[in-house]
Amino acid sequence: MSHQRVAIRCPSCSPSAETAHEVLNRGGGATVRCSECGHVHKTTLEETATVERRVIVSQNEESLEAHVEIPPEETLSAGDEFLVETDEAILTARITSLESIDGARVDEAKVNDVRTLWTRAVGNVSVNLTLHPKDGYHDETRSVRIQVPGDEEFIVGRTHEYGGEEFEVERILVREDATGYEREGYDFAGDSVLAKDIKRIYARDQDAQARAWSGW
Image (cartoon, rainbow, N blue to C red; front, side, top):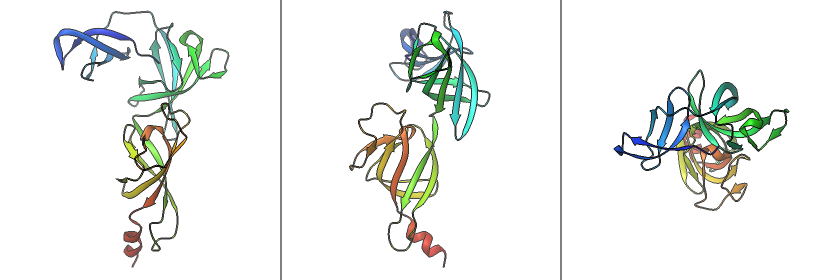
């Protein structure tokens, strides 16, 4: 979803002169982001013609329903991200597919041709880990899931620590709906992938020995 751009004053970096802003969400007082400093704030915009569309947001094996107002001439594409307000929270959602008026699933369409936006939450995400044993003290591969911010970066060859797990990343598989990646898997030292784009991480368990000795 290409964000509309407007010229308004930014309370953070330009309170007296207008700067370019991206419109993230028009509902309930528009949410905008300053293109100069990145500050996100609420403002009032002149009304333009919009249409309401249904949004299904997948988050941690649950599905939430909401509605968004979008200019009818806008083109939506799989991979687009936008803010959506649900009964539970304001979420950053990424389009995974679009349901057209005739019920077909497509990757790109004009808003007028769309019935439902199918999305997943990418602000905070679950990352699947397959942890291989570091040494002989622990001989079983484990599968665990950790919760991290969607923009957290995981790097091959680097040791990360989250949710009581410490692990060295060996290989990262990228999700099908991720954009901007050349390969489905990354395994060279220094390769990095954002958490919201990760399908699974294969890593070397760095705390296996400590867990083994704790059983004595």
